[in-house]
Length: 439
Image 1: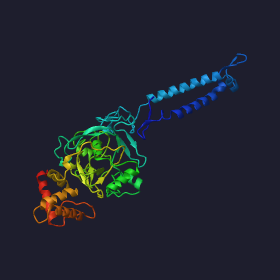
Image 2: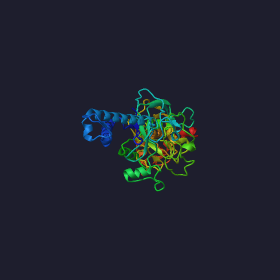
Image 3: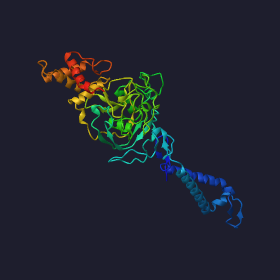
Image 4: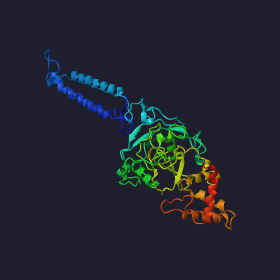
């Protein structure tokens, strides 16, 4: 017997789970109707055998077998009609689109479509790829992301990749999860926390929430019953089965520095990806749960309204201090068991010169330089120039890095915060590595 689809929670339920109550209710209803028609029910007198056009209550009750059989017949008829109605009604997704029909908001996908499955996949009969539900705590819509596998990292034909997006590797998502259909909005923040710290507050409540630290984003997600997505979950959901660097034409899917007018925009206005997720690229960078290369910095993904086109790609990786607040950084929440990488990329070794080039390229465009990369550059740039050995150089490098952090951003940017010539040599060293790869 088919289940009734709930458009709110995104699960098929109702009839089977409420069968006991429903049956009890129908029995009461059947006998209630039966008692109403009893006075007009044709019956045969048990004494004289004469059939009358109507019968009194006591006459019918005096023949219990006849009353019971008639009641059972009516009850069976009610059950048959109920079953027929429930089995012929189209199953509908949370967005009101019948299963099997294409969803224009999800790139023409059907509700039954799924991403490629991988080993260890657990069947999830209660939700399908792209199904939606509404979080009752902040009224934001969440999309079901099914288990599967994908190629993570620099897309094969992508010529804009940084070194930290390599090597490409196949990763597996064993646990399906829910992910916010859009970044968290200013309206949702106001409802849940009673505040809106966004730089672009006052324009439209559907603007993405920004200017929040990583800790604040984590607290919000926990308050509404969720968590931060991991980096692997974010890229898997952003790609939605697409192996290219973007899931559509740039201007159609993202707000970036070429079309944003130097500000954020209401969420959900651009084209969604195949899973029905909006603003995965552009509008605001999105916090993830993961740290970068074992540092205290946190990974952000997706690019923002003030980012160049090369940052609006599915594999682009950024990293900033968890205390950093910026009008180009927001987040979206996830629900469900976490998924972590099954393979690790060796490119993130800070002692590798190619990694330093990648980090420097990002730093010159507004990213913080992770401390271990600065220290490595500091040691290499100053080795043998005075009587300090490597141990002392490293101690000075750590001290100089921390002294160079500004009060406002708590991050060190290339070209600022360096307190002596050794630090300047470290910057020059990184920039020399960087220049040959500028595009």
